[in-house]
Image (cartoon, rainbow, N blue to C red; front, side):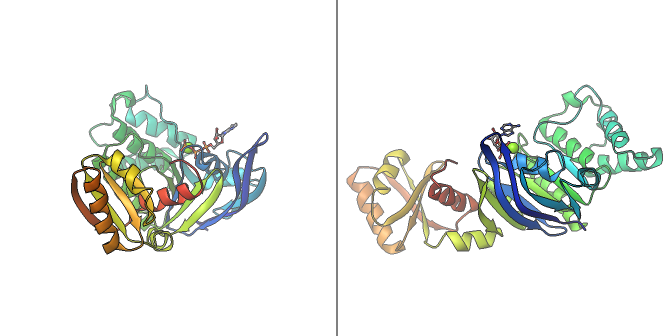
Length: 310
Ligand SMILES: Nc1ncnc2c1ncn2[C@@H]1O[C@H](COP(=O)(O)OP(=O)(O)OP(=O)(O)O)[C@@H](O)[C@H]1O
Ligand SMILES: [Mg+2]
């Protein structure tokens, strides 16, 4: 059983509820995205699912084992890459791998074979004797992932594995995650990069400890973005946003970098209105384009509805 089943899982710290009766299931071999703003309850949930923290209410089965009744069996079945950096900075790459191999109780021959495997998958050949501290962020994360899967767990939990990693390295990291999933490994991953969430088979969005949306990236876009989205590029986005968001035809308006996304009921009518409005305000309009919604559009919409902040 390589699945995760979560039932009414709840964690209270004193009177504060960090995780509030959440329910979800992760199928074998699935890449499952666990998303939410800072403090939403992602790491707390992961620590419970890894058998490191008991729940206040509800429970979960990970690999068939109950997290409260049998946390040790849970720990033996999983790999965990924590949000805080988990490697020893003053050891070399090889020494870190050996250390974790011993923690997992691997035999010398298994460890030797796995060491090479980790160097392969993390593409760290040639860096075996580098002191971990001297590796750049991306290399460190790859080594941390390698160490987390050293014992070939069938279920892995990755808590923000790509924070501080450049886009090229992030892509490589996701290739590695995809390879593991193709081998049947179940992956639960948190990220603040919504373009990464597009790679997940299923996603849940958690806000203040509660699940507020769940589904595949495609389902989330279809279910929550009912109106066309226009991307408006213009000379002064802040001013333009203030003008547009008060208009009755603008369902939802948000700034995306140097442009504005406007959710509208009637595309043609909105195009005319935007042109009129900006020209009246002496704002130089560069382009209006209909765009395919991204997960960022979905989440901004959902978090706005909650009155929360992204
Ligand atoms: N041991 C603890 N005692 C008290 N409060 C805690 C404890 N651990 C976490 N919290 C609180 O629980 C809430 C959820 O924290 P958590 O670390 O799970 O969030 P997160 O979704 O992982 O956020 P981030 O994206 O910043 O990593 C936060 O308000 C946090 O301050
Ligand atoms: Mg966290």
